[in-house]
Image: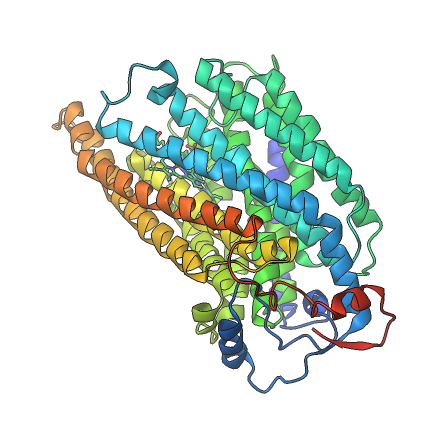
Length: 557
Ligand code: HEM
Ligand code: HEM
């Protein structure tokens, strides 16, 4: 047995053991609710106080009414408020820069996606320029969403969460700033390279490897300060979001380096590595960042600790154990050893464990408080994202079954699932997080609350059309391809109305992103009336005092 097989089997056995640990822990009743760790994200007396800097004053009042009308005590400990203010201030510049770049990439990526979408039902449109052909504009879209929007937004949110959760100022923010700048140069260079026809030719790994070096150095410079802050932390206990972020920061560089190393993988091994990376970048990079944000913002906005802290740890560990082997399900039916595919299918089904753990936890935290969604813009996006995490993962597990994959592979159904995961789950969570964070970073409230609603309804409506249309179209396409009596061309033409529907849905999503970006930059330029109630953690005159305050003194926050 060679080393690769031993390693694969070793991690598989470890995963099975993790399942037994899970069952044993359940039997021992380890999943009680509450716990000191779950309230760590709150200051003293803060449980019961809602928080959403994206909500208007009226919405905040309604939110508090919906959650805990009897909670009158908002006298907070001045020392704790000061600590949080200093933590926020230490990261605000680099977070602002990362999130600004993320929004720019989001708009460009959406426009590229829309062009690629139209080309699939109007192939003669815009063909005179090589960079606008489908073969280039599609990877431009994919890489811009993956390394531009999703990574930059996730890094920005993580850089903001880490000091808050560790109650420590960000150490070495200037390195993170330099890292963000290098990453931006890398994404720009990678996009231009693909547009000019230079590509490494593997999906998710298209940027030429020399450009990847910029991302490696940039990523290291961004990650380093988070590790340093972790070492200097002032809290005894690490909240579950820190686990997810730290793990993502560890996993992603390994994945990215191994997959992009030139001349290391060939033939079938290269395909296997390609999808080992392709799925792990989703499960071990974007998913942890998205879940870290959801685990922080859902309880924080509601002023209510997460339902079961132990369950959240189980979700984390089972993700760590089960995810690394699932990539093979992208190669079902391919010329790859069947045991490798079978392991990936088993692991894909086992993913039900972390997914159900997260689902129970996050949904039970919100259960009974759905009215809060009416008043909190942050929560509206994040709870929708959390629900779609469950949906995309359950769909993914089923899609990994050979019987289902035979129909869906090579069809638009896979693309619908891809957007359910990376858009419905991840991007929605990032939108909500940005709505919460930016008022704290800019010390200015969102100027026009109607634009947040417009963003939400445009992307929800657009995405629904996109997802439903493409799922049906893809399924019918798969059935037609399997039917020996149907000519192949018919399986292509039958998808045209569904592809047109995707363009309509995608156009609405893009419009939503333009509204979001316009609002984001308006906030940057301090448009709108001066409303600082929610944007500031403490009242303006109390803020400097709180930052200097000694333990035990109360301030109104
Ligand atoms: C239990 C969890 C999940 C499982 C088992 C799973 C399974 C799958 C399967 C079987 C495919 C199709 C492979 C093919 O036929 O080509 C797929 C594709 C994909 N999934 Fe998932 N999925 C899961 C969760 C997620 C999540 C949470 C995300 C997003 C964060 C996501 C994003 C994607 C993307 C982007 C693709 C398309 C990849 C490509 O072809 O470029 N999945 N997934
Ligand atoms: C933040 C927003 C978005 C994210 C995260 C995202 C993500 C993705 C991903 C992961 C893929 C690869 C799918 C696969 O290979 O199975 C993809 C492909 C694609 N996306 Fe998006 N997307 C976004 C927005 C859009 C928008 C607004 C449109 C407009 C219609 C769009 C249209 C497309 C098209 C046409 C493809 C290529 C599908 C194919 O090759 O058949 N996307 N996107």
